Length: 175
Image (cartoon, rainbow, N blue to C red):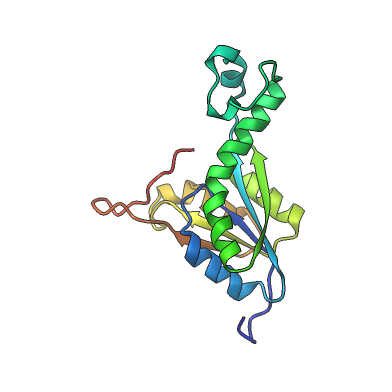
């Protein structure tokens, strides 16, 4: 850590588009003597879909569940599987830097509000998130990252993901 940079508590909000190694390196430089950061993702759980699944039509997130899994157990298994897909690359890169992850899988319909709320709950002083759109377009100002920047009192660092060469747009990662 640079001596003129105060240590900060960081919340990393990811959908799986953050470049893991550069994000972990950046966090290492900012957390000082702290040994962990909070890594979160927001998942919209399709409860009506999960409720409609019979035991004979189980998906991968239900494979380890008991045949008589309750709706809440199905939703929790879905949240865990989808959440792991999003946070595992970042957590692996952070671990390589010697940084522990406090992982949060948040169920919600409004990712921006969920990120802001989680940042408040964990006492974050900065939010790091991926940018999936060009920042200087009208559409980008309706994005989750723009809404977090506008509605949160915290500094927000937007890290661009990999670009699709022909359009120069960021890929959308389907979870």
